[in-house]
Image (cartoon, rainbow, N blue to C red):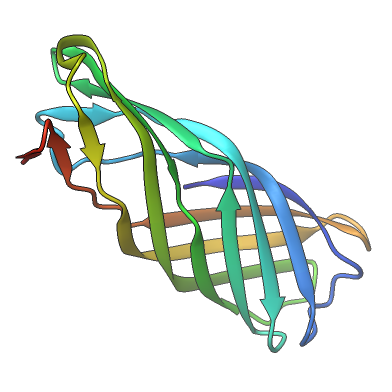
Length: 174
């Protein structure tokens, strides 16, 4: 889930007790274990995250976003479904000590993805498609780059393990 975000904070040197707010576009690029059967398309949505620094080097971040909408296609069979999802994620971050103008960080996290508004289309129109919600681990690597005393630019890349089971008219799909 790469992100390019513009963000705001008071001053740049990170201190304990400081909050950072970031907002910008996030890209979700699903990779399916069923890649020989189905494909889920990439989407962009608005993301926002809040980071709280316990120390200059240790922080926790909460990621939120507006819903991502995805088409589900059978390989060689056209679109057979649509779904929306929200992937809120909590990440524990380690920020490296630098000169203050460039703040790289990384960390592990936990994700809960809720899938909703599933709809069967195309060859599966009229059937009941259901996708389970998902708990998974996450990882993040990023950096804040100081633009001035008030603004900074953020770049980050996330890996989020989202696994869902699908049922069609109550029958489990593998």
